[in-house]
Length: 111
Image (cartoon, rainbow, N blue to C red; front, side, top):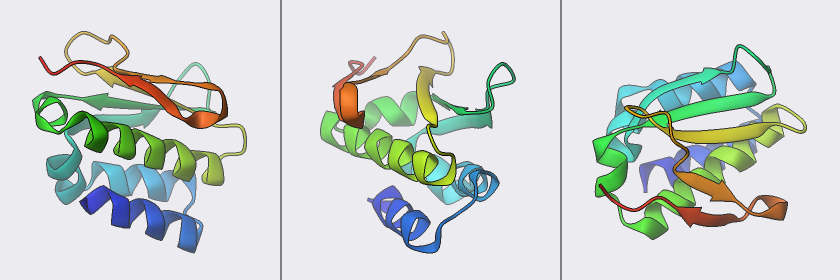
């Protein structure tokens, strides 16, 4: 829930990519969404890499999908054509699959 308000705020206030990263890395957001690390990919500055941990998996699948949808929308607002990769922090495996148009097609199962 906390991230839903942050995503709405991000779109309403047109955050820069750096501001969005800072908001996702903030302690309250990390606790609410299970984000362990967030950074721009060193290989491609259009790619936002969000690494998630145990708290992410404790969330309901709908909440995880909602967070990922909000992250993608806010990142694409800040970085035209931007891409979000949501990865497991311990394995590096993708935990969200986006369908064309940015809809979350699948979220990884709780571990």
